[in-house]
Structure formats: structure tokens, C-alpha cells
Image (cartoon, rainbow, N blue to C red; front, side):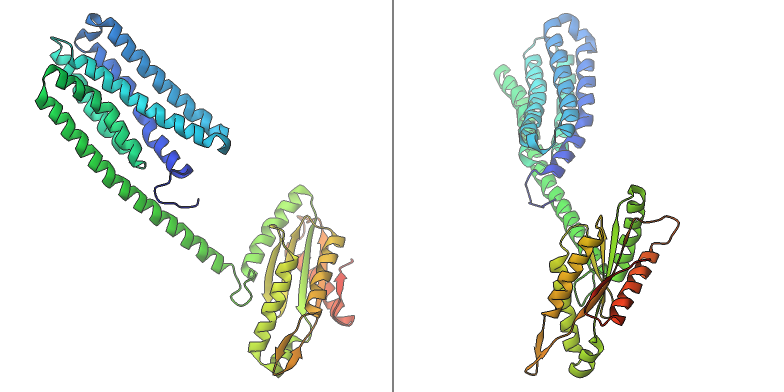
Length: 368
């Protein structure tokens, strides 16, 4: 997730939906209680029917829409977000307009009191639910409370209208504060996630070369051994070793040796570019590469590119060109669950030994 403060990304939208879904059942339950109390529905059948049916329809629509959007993907994300926001405002308007109409009725004090209490409770709950999106929270508040305020002013009930206005302002202020707290928490969570990923990356990385380290390679080797074994797919291992590297360290010093290791690592990274390739420092001047789904020929060609790249590579030290070569051993095959994962590494190491014994600066494929 790319964090942008205030932006309604997928994470925030999912939070909005989760926080507001439970309220749908309360809208339905309270609308039923409102029309049944004091047998209100018998005196105002049409109003009760319109109120119940519109409530049921919008709640059902929002539930179905919530289910559908989870299967539609990102292509219709903006449209679905707009539909969600509009449906929320319609829910608020249904309650606000209904309470406004009830406020205009004569001799319905009990129903007016009950509907007012329900409205205030639902409005407060909705504002809290929509806190992740400040404007939606405020618009929900206005859509629910503005109609009854207007109706109360029409009938001359100024004190109650003023109470609604003050309540609306209070909720708007609380929504603003809650939104800031939500985004602060979300930002802290995002920063913590970034730091966790960075720590994980550092724990898997060789400090000197920037390649993966031995521990990470062993983990990936074990996982890929099992996966390739289940799928019956090829797996290749290449072990590289810089030839006569000790001479560089002894004659030029470890700083030049470290620089040479870094440049060799750059050559490896430039050759093995697939996301599934795992290139690691195996220890000292040795490197190891894990190549899922790759056969002998392709592995050999890539190893040759590395060999040629290192052969042509040099660094200048005290006006002298420092050069060396690299040898490689390859083992390829379909993993056998009857054998250990490190057996393939052992075979690649044997091929590397043959390359060294054969004169170095060469690539050898292990043959049983």
C-alpha cells in the first residue's frame, strides 16, 4: 500500500465498509421498532410502509453491493467507491426525511420522541463509523440532521431545532478529531510496516555485497526444493568462486579485496534478473545462485556470462590493473524427496572443484 495521508485507498475503503456494515442491521431494527411503537403504523400506514421499504431496500442494496465489489477487482474501484458513498448518504436521508415528516405530524409526541432518540443515536454511530473519511462523516451528519432541523423551524420548535444544530456541530468537530487520530494511527502502522520490511531485508542481506546472505539462501533453497519436488520441475544450482582471490587480499589488502567482491556481485546481479532467481554470497569469495525452472543449457549460458564479465572486469590499485577470473559448478535436476536439499549444493560444489582442477576460469556441469 502506498501511503498518502487523507487519500481513500483500498485499505481505508475496506475500513469504512467494515465499520458501517453492522449499522445496517440497526437501521432496519430501529425502523421496525419506530413504526410498531404505540401502533404508529395503524395511524400512518403509507408513511410507515415507505419508511420500512426504503430502509430495507437501501440496506439490502448495500449488503449486495458489498458482496459484489469484493469480486469485481480494481477495474471498477472508483465507480464502486462512488456507489458506496451515495448509498451511505441515501441511508442518512431516508432517516432524516422520515423524522422530519414525523415532526410535522400532530398528536404524535411519543413517536416524535422515539424517532428523535433513534435518529440521534444512529447519527452519532454513523459519524464514528465514517471517521476514516472526514467529508463522508460530515455529509452523513448533515444529510441525517438537516431535514428534521428544517421541519422543526417550520413548526416553530426553535429550541429543539437549535439542539439538533448544536448536536450536529459537536459531531462534526468529533469527526474531525477522530479522522486525525485515525490517520495518525494509520501512518504509524505504515511506518512500522516499512521498518519491519527494512529490518527483514537487512537480516537477509549480505552487508558487503548487497546480495542475499547464506541464511536467506538456505530458507529459499528448502522452500524451492519442496515446491519443485511437488511439481516435478527443474531446479539449478550454480556455485561461483573467484580464482586466486587470496592473492588479491594478500598483495593489495582487504579493502581492495572487498571492492572486488562488490564488483563481482554487480556482475552476478546484472546476469540473473528473474524475480525467482536467488543470488547470494555463500561465504568468503564464493557466491551461489538458485534458479527455479531452469535446465542445464540455460544455466550454463548464464554462468558463462558471469565468467566472461568477471574476466573482463578490473580495478585500478596503485596504477596497476587488478584482475582475476571466476570458476563455476552447476547441478541441475528435479528434486528427489528421498534426498536432502543440500545434496544438490554438494554436487554443484563437486562440479566447481572439477572446474578448479581443470585450470580455473571455466564452468563445469555436474554429471553423475
